[in-house]
Amino acid sequence: MPPLRGVAAAICAGLILLADLSPLVADEFPGKPVEVIVPFAAGGGSDVFARIFQKAIRDYALSPQPLVIRNAGGAGGTMGSRQARDAPADGYTILCLHDGIYTAQHYGNADWGAEDFEPIAATGRSGVVIAVAENSPYESLLELMEDAVSRPYELVFGTNLGAPNHYSALFLEEGKPGARFRFTQTGGGAKRLAQLKGGHVDVTGFSVAEYVQFKAAGIRALVVLSEAREPALPDLPTAREQGVDATHSLVQFWWAPKGTPQDRVQYFADLLGRAMETEYVRDRLDQLHIEPVFLTGESLEELIEERSARLEGLEIDAPTPLPPLPWIVLGWVILCALWVWRDEYRGRHR
Image 1 (cartoon, rainbow, N blue to C red):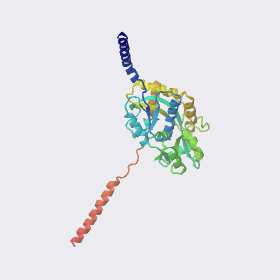
Image 2 (image 1 turned 120 degrees about the vertical axis):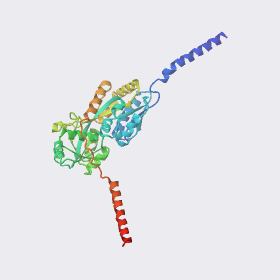
Image 3 (image 1 turned 135 degrees about the vertical axis):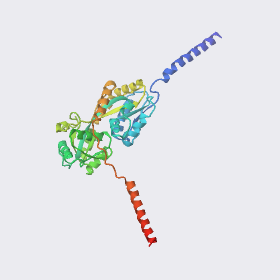
Image 4 (image 1 turned 90 degrees about the vertical axis):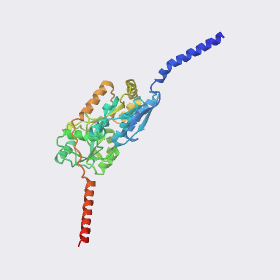
């Protein structure tokens, strides 16, 4: 009996110890796969970028749980960002979205922005190239901008309205007082290339990686909007070198829903930092001509505030209002009906 009593006591002690440890096990994060919302279609630049980190984290075993990419494209990235904003703030949903988080809000495409998320990290900066078709008469950015001054709203700039590409053109307008483009909705890089080659637009913008990929198709760069010349295009001058005070670039950010516990935000910041140090991520970013910027904490907050504040002074021309076509049609119908009624009335009383 005494041995049995001792065994029972040991079992009870073990159960008590497990009960004491169970909260620690339950609180271990992450305890399941983490969903990364990419608010654009699969295969695009943002999708490729997020999957670079996904692969590095998996292949280098940087996390006990994988990142699962979910593409939620539509409405210029706002459908996916809204889904991320409304997701539970438990650390199991994060968002990978560049400066579009500011531009969509500033343009009026979204009523939410950076302040509605917990910033995790910035993990790369891409330069912006302004390009024309190979047979374009413009040999320099200054020639283009002077024409945009002398013929406002006649030069067509292909872009995604409210997206960072659109804001590249707005910064150009700001840098050359009096210049005005006429904007047309085009789509992603491949669609902008087709529009440019087809003569449907006069000018458009690409990331450095897009331009390097597309330039053999018959387009020509006029300028890069970076602070300094891009290593991939050392002979391409900046806008400031050409007398136009304009700079713009694209920074890739990672966000968590507002209210996500800071220890979980920090987990992802550390995780992305370790991924940035891997040879795979460094090589892939180099291939895509993305500067391996990595910022978290106070430096990240300062960058977010600075980039958001830059948009405040930009002037956005309101689109020309369309005529009230339904009311015009209704008016004509009523007039025609009255005309017919008058003719019939006169016919009956003759």
